[in-house]
Length: 91
Figure 1 (cartoon, rainbow, N blue to C red):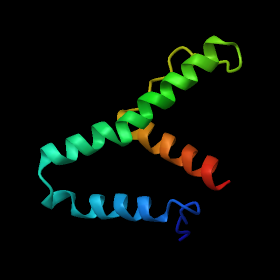
Figure 2: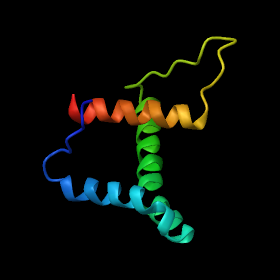
Figure 3: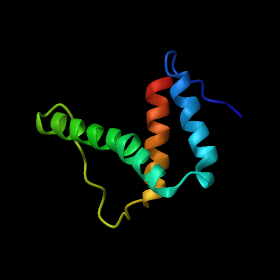
Figure 4: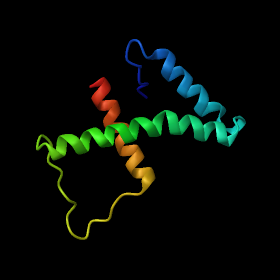
């Protein structure tokens, strides 16, 4: 199994993320929610806003799914996005 190696300069950040994920059952939910809101969710919203801006400027073209195709679940979307970001950062 391949293990992702963090980009140079971000090893401490990703070590912290792994630790939080490992210890999530022992961390108060309101603390986890605050971390998600100021970290991962904030980044996702900023990234989505940036994609929307470059789409509106005509530099990115989004295609609607084919008729009859069901949208993926939130978990499937998270997996797809995580994989895409990994490829982008480590490709």
